[in-house]
Length: 547
Image (cartoon, rainbow, N blue to C red; front, top):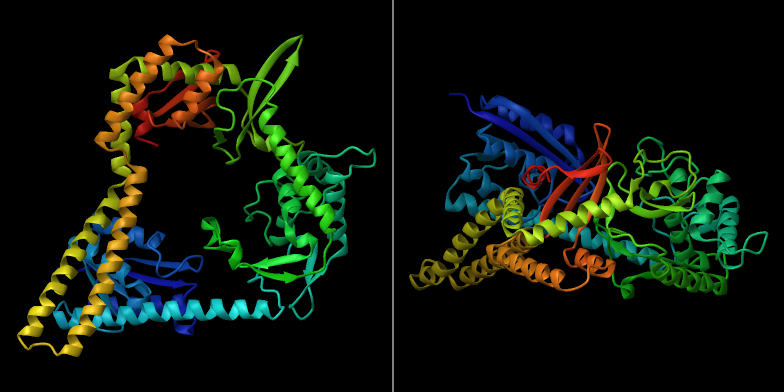
């Protein structure tokens, strides 16, 4: 019977050699290998993974391979060489072990590693070398880039300079770009000193003026293809958050920082400030004006938190499913009657391109959500059923994590066993002292990193799961809250406090022309659909299966 094969090729930001970067060449070699061995080719999976690393576990192509392995869709995975599957030893061991549990072999075009003690040892040695090369390359590049900045040269890694600047001809310095620099100065003046009428403008008001003037933003200038940019607003359209980001940028007072963040794309994390490297650049505003802007922003934020004119139960706890923006609260007075609404933040400014999400009556939204909470808290059977549905849904979502955790556990047991046998081999004179020390150090390193990965996976399950003990605790909490609600006055403060205690969030959207609310909290999920001038529940168990 002909074996079925999948080929896998990968390039990433770790790669420096021409061979490593050539995706097509990897595909050609793995395809020819599969044909030479008479395998039936099911599919070819390739990922240009330059936004991540060969050490990352969360890669789309590999995840797809594991899903197909679980379905029994193939028998052999063909990869050019070990460092194309992974440049991390623990990841390589884990993936191969998971595939092996499904009866799938991993074969490499370059290098043969039979499933014997010697073959596995040679494979691990090659994987360790690949990992060492990755770390060495990363550390050398990081050190080199930092040294370049310390010598006074700008390093932008292919990104555009900050708004208001351009790179010098030799690419080593930031120089002011007058058309944009004047916009920066105007923004600071409007914010700290006022406009032509002497009135200080808020960040939102400034964004509105810039949009009316059709001033290109940094994202407009940066992108090459307007349709492929992640910017949610149209060309020349500004948001208040974009203005605030400009006002907080220290570059404009003459200090540019390198290494503020680490990570990739959506997973940015800030480095400690002491690790930043500062570089003096031409200032666009004085230090005094910049500091005044920070003080003004702090005062505005404090006043905004305290000056909520009306009561909104779900204020700042909802997002728009259509565009991803947050949901803000707004009010309209008509014929002496007040109407309160929730609306998408993309509609906060008078922009050309707005989100299609309509306004939601705040009284209808708040009433529906509060009625649901009261019903759950005062009906133990419904609450328990909802929590169990939520728990079952989380269990299903965590299935792949549990599978990897089980694999890591088996690998830990295997390598701990090898550690225990080392001393016996040494005492039986089958190992020299030098070999004993070398293998012991290597195995201890593998065990230590497997333990770290095990802890990481357990933390992920803990954060996303709901144990029986937690379920019981929540039920007890709900009963206590229910009794308290019956004893004390039902005020807005009481309701809002409960919303925050339950960590309740909601997503607003449209389905088949109807307004929809999807609610999530520790009591489980719920969905509401608007019809006949009110929101009615769609069903906990139905939403849990799709959340």
